[in-house]
Length: 115
Image (cartoon, rainbow, N blue to C red; front, top):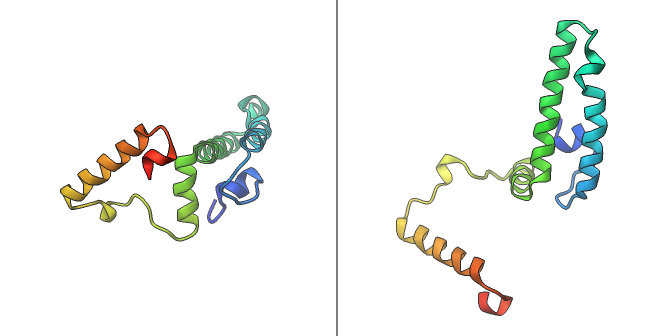
């Protein structure tokens, strides 16, 4: 697959804000083409290739359907490293403060409470 992106694999325009119905439609079309029954009479090498391709399609769809996974993938496509081992927060006090602020934001009922 080399440099083929998840977007290219599914035939979608590369953008973060996706219409998930487009993702699902592309997935269904590819799954029809890759269904094992369509390749039952093919040789073992062809069946293995279809299996690998189906797995890659599944990976692409799972990534693009999830806003969190899509964000990480989008950033990586644009050269921003995310969630790598050397990016871990080392200062426990700062980490606790970040967790407390995150909890406060999650519990807030309005933007005014967050501000």
